[in-house]
Image 1 (cartoon, rainbow, N blue to C red):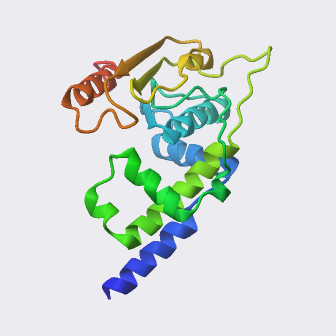
Image 2 (cartoon, rainbow, N blue to C red; image 1 turned 135 degrees about the horizontal axis):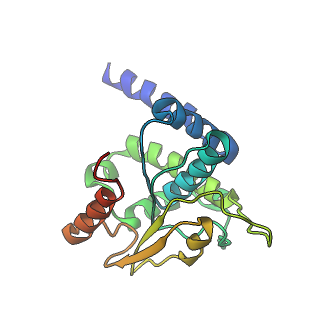
Length: 209
């Protein structure tokens, strides 16, 4: 029964993996709008690829529904217009090499690293995520006008710095960047960084919301 349950879960996860930005963002945008509507204030916080997803979802919400987050918090992600270059295509990287990436990045519980079935799922998801990142293109033309007006705050680990200054061009609102100690997962196992992140998130909401 346990094996069958795990098999059903694996099938569900695999069938829900998305590798096309247009479909992913459109579905995400509609889900958010249907859940929040125009009455509930919200902010977005996204880490790494999740930051790009939050940005694109925010743009979609503003363009399609006329709403946007009160604050966009970006973590460990370069600005969208930065060209992402990789010496090798994701298709050329083996599952074993992707599993090594997960281990080397840190932040994954040892219980997951030791579970082959869960790691197989994680590698499949990581491959889909990296394929999305590899195929992502955002071009700022001379006539570009930012859709967003919300403030954007960026966070980065000083041991894994990203090119984040370009995020200031993605909004007409306020922009600030914080560089904290640590690497890609600077907020894990670092109470000071975690507290600072939580404080800024709390401050993103007006006191009467």
